Structures are given as C-alpha cells and as structure tokens.
Length: 415
Image (cartoon, rainbow, N blue to C red):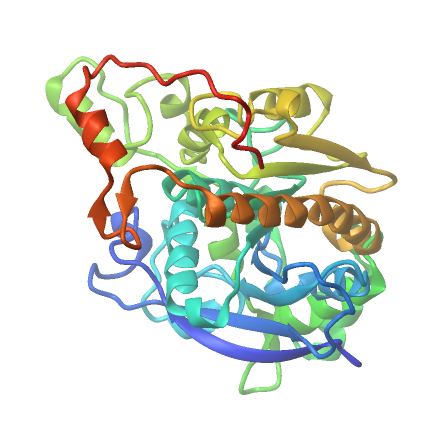
C-alpha cells in the first residue's frame, strides 16, 4: 500500500509435516513453506495498554495483502496498541504457491494451514508479544478455530469475519463451480486488471482492497502475460474435497476403504455419500462448544452463507461446553451485523470492521491485563522457594482423601 503506516518484513516459514491427505503433496517428504508478511506500526500510539500481536487467516482465493486496508484502519485507532500483525498465504495459494508449486498435489486440507500457522508462530515467537489475537475471514476462521482447539490457550481472543462454519454445504451451486470455470490467463496485466475491475463480483469492494487484489492475485509470466497467483485448480480443490470412488458398504474391504479415503467422516453417513464435501467442517463445528478464546462474530448483512438460522447455531453453541469461554451468557461470545455488505465484508467495509475490532480489543486487552495481574499475584499453595519445592499445603493436600472438596472462599481471589 502507498503511504503505509507499517514497516513490512517478508519471511518464509516451514510448513508442517505430515500433510493431512496423502495427495496434498506430490511425495510425502516434500518440504513446503509459507510466504509470510510481518507488519510493524511505524508509530506507537500514546496509550498504556498492552500491545497485541495479530495472527491473520485469509479466505480462499484472496491474497493476504487484501487485509492491508483493515490493518491500516485498525492502526488508526489510537486506543489500540499493535505490536505486530502476521499474515501468511495458505501453502497452495498466492505467494506461498510460488514457493511450493513443484511439490503441491491436488488434495489440500484446511487443517494443514492451521498447523502451518502454529509452526509459524513458534518459528517467529521472539518477534511476537502477547496477547495473541486471531482475525480470520471465511475459510480462515475455521482454520483459526481448529488451531485454538489443539492449543486452547494460544489465542486470547478470536475475531471471526463471516466465517464458513457449516455442518453441511451452503445453498446454491457447488462452492467450487465459479473457481473451476473462471478465466486463468490474460495477454497482459493491464487487460487482466481491466476485466477484473469490470466484474460485478468485485464491484462492492473497497477501492483499496480491489487495487491490492488485482496486484497480488495476478502473477507475471516470462512472455508478458499474467496468470492467477492462486491457480484456479488449487482454489477449487480448496473449496471442496471430492470423492468419486464407488461405495461398497456391504463388504469389510469397502468399509475399510471408506475410512481410508474420508477419515474425518462416519463411513456411508450422509456427508460421506456425497461427491463433494469439506470434511474438516464436521470436527471443527463439533468443537465450537469447547472453544476457549473469547470470540467476536462479524457477519455481513447480505451474506449468502451466514443467514439468520446459521448465525444462531454458531453463536449459541460457541464456548458453552467443557473448557469453553462461557458463551454469550458469560460474555465469552458476541456478534455484530455489518450493514450493506455480504460475505466479502472484510474487503467491502474495512473501516466498519476496524471500528468493531477496536471496540472488542479494548475490552479484551483490559481482560488480558486483569488475568495476568491475577496470575502474577496468585499463591496456589503448591510450592515454595520460587516454585522449586513442595509447599506444606501441598503435602497436606496429598495426605487428605482424594474426594476432599475445596472449602468455600471469602472472595479474596478476584480478577
């Protein structure tokens, strides 16, 4: 972006081993990398609040750079202190595809990116400062949720922008149809940009986001032509996972093969009988009640994916189970509707989203500080000598009956 408020550093980060599906790579020992951008604000706001590190996860087919107007608008809020923002293209998309194209297969898994982001965070942990905040759009929301499910304390909070979180496919044609049929090459960048900007699909995008999309969604070829930086095949395979094998439910071999092909699904259940499905959705949605980070849902008013009934299920189920954030009732989950935009709201209304995110983060950073203060001062009674030796209270605890209940307190332990 011109006159960017950030210093931008590019990195590469190793991807996780092993990939979820055998055909996700051409050979099992292939080494993949993520193309990563780190954004550091050039000016620190005059605030005493803790700086946050944002981990971003993009939607399918949209380069990570499309988020930059959102980051700029968010950074403009002086109440928010951003330490750094980290964004990575999925291994088979955008700049990451350019690093990995020789090794990529035809069977990407959304979960792979969750694990790749986890490895990225650990690789660059010295450049990050808590609390970690996950911000995702569409597919990226599901990937952040899965990462939070395998490491519940990693993210202090999640902001999910019109997420794809359905147990069954949304209404309408196959999600991969548009990508499978789209044009992929143009004679020149000028012709490609002209055609894309005339496309009604992109008409409602913020002009800054659209400019970044045409800049980074296209890749220059040696002969002067341009092609998509994320090939339409990779984008289409990311939308749905196909299964065109015949079903043989009446034999042990048929049932064994079914578990091999679609390990996330119950053999011959309704989703497993379909020719196209996104199987990761089932375990991710089933894990919503156990989601620990406090979560803000942001929905586009005209979203064709998250109509009212879908939103109600997502919001009502999130955080209400064992290990969860307490759900709406305990302030662990909130939702907002963004006016006059659809599923691409992050690219249509970045200023409105930045305002909602800033308000949410203000409360979440205050909670982070309260919780950190609690643990800094808390005496758990289990150790002494700088947490190196067993305390007397611990010894008395292990001598007592294992069914001993904790006494009622006097409310001294407060956040």
